[in-house]
Length: 278
Length: 283
Image (cartoon, rainbow over all chains, first blue to last red; front, side, top):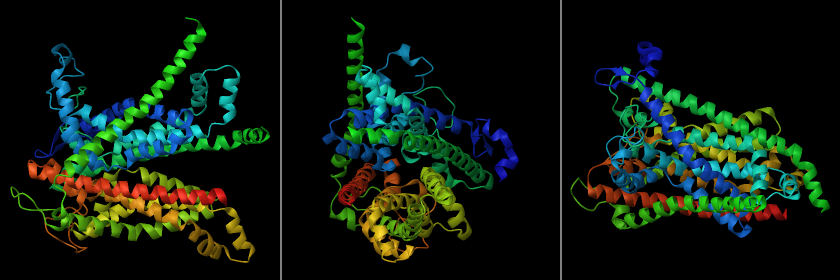
């Protein structure tokens, strides 16, 4: 590919993206992709785990199915619909928050930049909403595979509900880590909703309010209009690397979830017979 | 405060947090649905389904070409993905213990996690570049790739729900393995498999990224498989990112149609699988 021949590894270290001058550096996209996904996970993980625990451990049986259905609906809504909602509802709301912040806060590097609404914060929030159902449904499955003896043992020792659940979560930690990684993989590759709200500006910035860019978004936006070979191959290279990253992360998360499922069959056996006896 | 009260308090706080998390996640869902319905309903009328888009600045018009395009693209995708997906699902459930089945399962799960934009790039290289032409076929191919793993995994799950006694009964009557699968097990799981296909269709009908540079877009009415074709999602994207109020209104209506498709399919699927699970519980 021409972009590999011309730039080599420099492609991933430089941050100048100037198609007109034929200068391509993919650092801003790597940064934007990782930053938005990590932020999204920071928001989504506690909420998703809370949902998984509520559904699998706490809620009345009659509520379980409807709650599962509703949380999974979050995953069923098309990305483009989230994007549309993002542009016309979320972005103005974020902008209102930005302009209402005191100047002292606005001068911090984390919050600097023009109050556009379009930018990292909006993208991360939308991503969080989109990955919550993935993380919570897998965590729920994983928690279901924790043997009952684990919780009963904790209760028998006088544990409170929180302590018993903590024991179960600790038991399921590998699988839950897998669930979070699966959510990470989803967030990295999410395209349309992010493209529509992140502002599409290839600049590396710490600021939550700065418009930035992601790998998926740049491919979606610029591929159809990329005229020359170098431009095209730069975009294909970005797509290829995105593919490899998500592949590795998905494979790892599946392995974690599976290793969890396998230990379950070994440990769960005596528990079931104990239940039959009871 | 005694340690016990503190522990109990912590426990109650935790339960409260979990319940709060559920509510917190329901807020965006409610918001999205509320806005899609309230904004989308305003321009949703018969003309939306039967008329072509009007030129910029002219009110009215519809998305007839995009709706037909989405139907054609989904049909092409299903034509490609249903045979491949169902057959690999059968393989995974019938030869569940084998090493190759595990590999297939892993591949399906991994393919399922490939970002849709990457699928689009792949389809561009395979189905657009050699012909130097954006086409409905290329778009259908991209969507089909996304459908295969979903159909394969649901088929597998549904076949595993069929009571083992049915399979054993067929084998005991002297049926060959293929006979047992195709005449006994598969028909029993059929409602579930159809459900899976419907869900997969709903999912790909809502995809935009794989179509951006495969099916591209088309301002005109087209049913040709070799021409670029419009789709609801790409049309919503174009309208949403455009500068005109008319376009935004149309985009919301398009979103409403998409969300309705997804909602109706999910509800149907839920009813159908519930029946199958009840059968499994009885079996």
